[in-house]
Image (cartoon, rainbow, N blue to C red; front, side, top):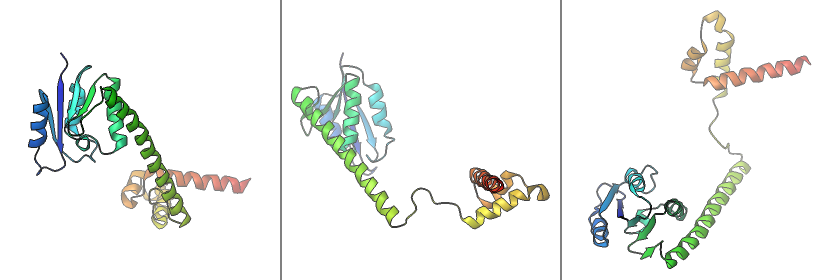
Length: 196
């Protein structure tokens, strides 16, 4: 038999789930998963449990759209995943049921908005990166201090004399093994190119 499964969420521990739970019970939900976590967090355990619990033909019922998703893109992804599994999605306050013709139209529009939102984010990120590069800002992780790297390489070259292993050098200087090995490789390449 197809079930109505509720999902309620509040952002902070101090907030109350009572209103949402009441509305979900009134709608006919026999099982309700309750979460006290920010929607910005991806590890919403109760939502994951609810999605795992649902079976084909069931409906996930949520009081308000913003209780389920962080963005249009996030909402579309969840709705798509549910749709693929043959699971319906209902929002009580907005009166949206994605299994009805009007709901399906809304779902299609939601997909277009989600794509537009994703494109905007990608464009803003690209513009921000280009602006930072133009201003001479370094993109990516901060590099190691050159003096410390030189010290690590010196210790590596003298390791036979002072009995240090690469692990010891890493502990002493904080320079990662990968950096030490890549710098040694660079030096060997330079030395070889000078010979030829």
